[in-house]
Length: 102
Image (cartoon, rainbow, N blue to C red; front, side, top):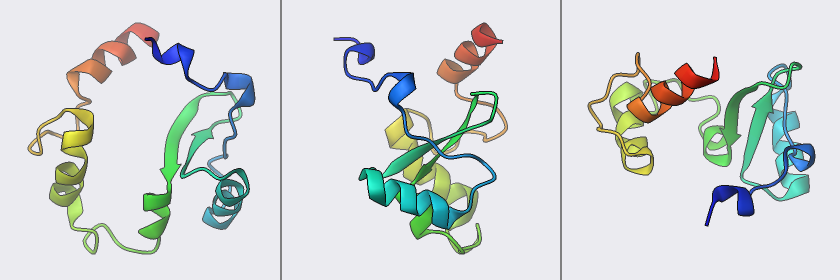
């Protein structure tokens, strides 16, 4: 089945704003009972996703978290990319999507 069958309609999505604090986002996530929060601009553009894991790392430097290599290793299996991928270029499936939406 398609993702659209199961996804939350956009008008019912709970989201945060880039200018809000981590504490505010944590409160929203706790009240709603979710482990992730889309972050949307005032124009309605998704700027990113804040996760419970992001917040558990809050206050740690990139070096403390293991840097780029540890980050790529931790996400590579989940997003279908090599742990040696460049962070400068989006994965091919994202590059195509970005090129067709602009």
